[in-house]
Figure 1 (tube, rainbow, N blue to C red):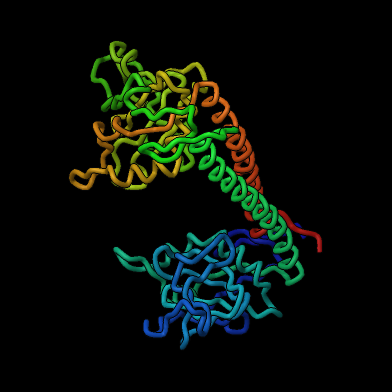
Figure 2: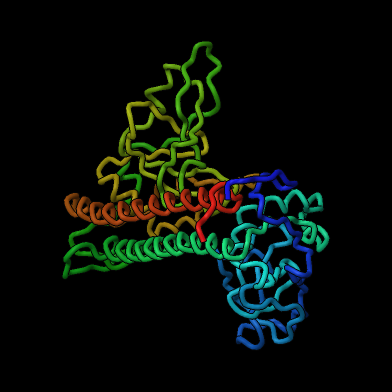
Length: 416
């Protein structure tokens, strides 16, 4: 069980075989073909139709349309391989379906290959298909490249055991994903309620931004902040200027967190430190971007250590004054704010910008300060739960990657 051999795909256990995906005794390969568009429908007539990677999930795809006259068909448990950019991604067909030209179906002979073992091996090594792909602007792989792809083949009982172990980890990841989705729905619901109805109010009034509690006021953003400022540009040419971490739009995650693991450093002279350094409670906004969905994305800066942090020229810093910073941060993540952003964006040579004048005129509901803090505390508690769940998922992903590396190469053998 501990003897190995060197092969064209690397070092593998001595009793494992190497086979090609073109070996018809082991694999049947079905290349997709798109049927006439007149046969597409959303009334579930015919078979679910998968066109390519766009319908893929983590393991199983989610078809959105059907085809009444399918040409090429994938059977349940076929491995679906994306053959057009992006090349190499895989899913498993959960049911009989029609496949378009962006996919191929790899059908394993169950007497030789366990479909889940094949799925996990191709998922772990999918990037190797990119090497085989052709096309300068639009990468694709042909039947001959797929057929020439080599995989290791342990004895069938060992394949089953490897698949069982990796499936167990995937089940745990799925449960965490479901918990994350539930918590995200809870947060959206709480934000909608707390930022419009508050806590325990029974009397309301009509305002220019809708119905709000009687004790609340409506203010413009410019009236509750003391600073609206673009970030620092480039590196300082002064000799001896010290390097500091500078937060860019790439550090602002989709859920409004600041990820500092890959933060860039720039030289900044002492005379600019007080003007541009971030302080606890500052709110950062993506002020310029080529992507419309990034503009206005907000993150709350909470001093993580004793370093001095700055922000780049494509970012905007606002400093809350007569408003709880966390409350304002949560408002800047609300659906009302998202709708406001859609009407604001300006473009210049393809770059989208957050216009200062209109942004500062944004009207917001303002509860009394104690209620602002209670609302922020409730939403912060949900955020902490989300963070814990996401860390659990990251840990499980690391475990899965390590297991795939060990089990799919035979570095660690399983007892059958």
